[in-house]
Length: 472
Image (cartoon, rainbow, N blue to C red; front, side, top):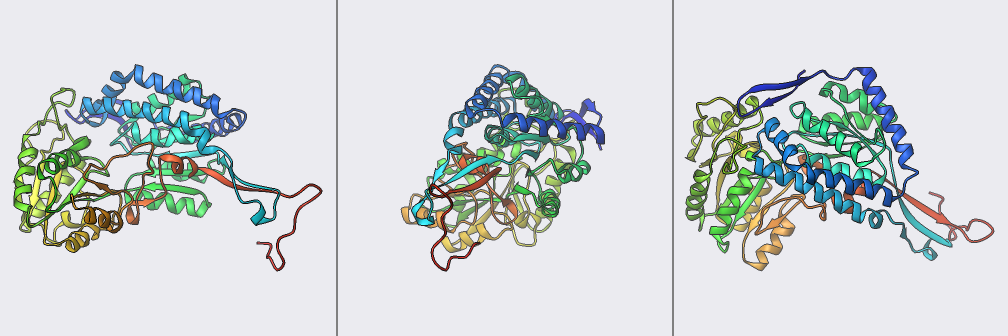
């Protein structure tokens, strides 16, 4: 198992790290447990001060943090800087809203024969976060900001190809003022996850990653009776109906497919286009995709950088070759460039059939599949005809169709006439094989809280329930 920074633009290994020993892991969990006890004695306002300080550090050091992310996983420097800014925004959001999200919620005391009754939200303890490389700062921050503000502590097992980003996050929270151990990076491989999650001091886990990783975490957590939140893969539909603004839809489709070099769970991947506008949309979309500049991710003019790993690039190309071998047509791209590094061009494939891998699999790179449909019902059938259910897009100016898409698309997120993205203000997560639970918003903060019922009887003792009431 290798923990290393390898520049995907060149394939050059820049830095390697030794995995932590069993003893080092145990000590880190101990510090997280002790920090959790310390956080119990702090107020939301104190934690907000530290969280705002972390946001200030992110803003002040944005360019250097972005350079590290670009070097480790190949995202464009411009998008890396935007990611740092988004993380600072999320930190400030939770610093501002945590008190309201964690406030006691009054219940109908009379209905439950109480003098007072309310719901209280309290932290669970150390939470293990198993995070991916594609948004190496944002994926972590959208867990860490609400979890720390709730009073939990975090143990980060990051992807093994982004160790520098993982370490800088620990450093940012430490310098911001959080107690030692409140947020710790564990430089370990996947084989260490079971030891960590099985430790009784670790109370829950969150994972963003593959279906296989999600099943493994869920299995361990189920055995240990621990809460999990899973955000897994996606094969998001992007439906274009006859009333859509085709120019805008084609332009947004290009960004939606190639954001982060095409390596995003919520990137649009399956473009489902009504036959009445299929040819016009396909031409516009292919033209936009062909115009994207592929090159040095540190160059501000670059639109698409390299994929994060050689294995990932080869898998994407294998899926495209499978489509071609089974009758698919490539409108743009489809060939591996002859250069060092792990590059793949923006690619559009049409004439897809159920026999092809691209029909049923997530493609984690800048490759779009075009599907022709003849009706709204067929569009929904194709859109929902996947094991995934993370994000979805629908383009239509028809109010009735907009209302139907909002109900009929089987996904955790539905974006109409816009690109799927995540906001601190809105819950984020999926259904089916895309996982369960929610991140962000108040729901994301409360996922790792004990939702505690508090019932207070009248003066002089408890109250009995209504006649015939059971005790459970």
